[in-house]
Length: 143
Image (cartoon, rainbow, N blue to C red; front, side, top):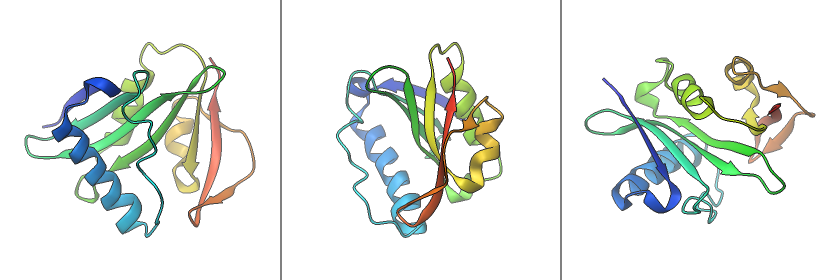
């Protein structure tokens, strides 16, 4: 059984932040072999929203919603633990992040995951590009 958790940047408990950063590092840095600066100074901003699904013992999936300069929101760092993939957890988080949301959204999707985001009204808004050696595409959801 999983439980949905939410926190604004300043309200994020240190233990939760540690587990979130551990999961992001485990998947994005180690598994996907991408050396990049994951800690970008945006996690603790007041307008940043964190959503994650956890079992009793670990965080299984996570995403964050950032305020975009000039308006709208950006969804990013969508990640699922290897042991929890195939259960629809990323879709549950997307639904929770967008439930009742107003305004436009943007995200940079790994190309293989376009279908997930299309289910939530996101459309491709540009050419494919490489980010850390992985094909991505920008997708937008009008507000």
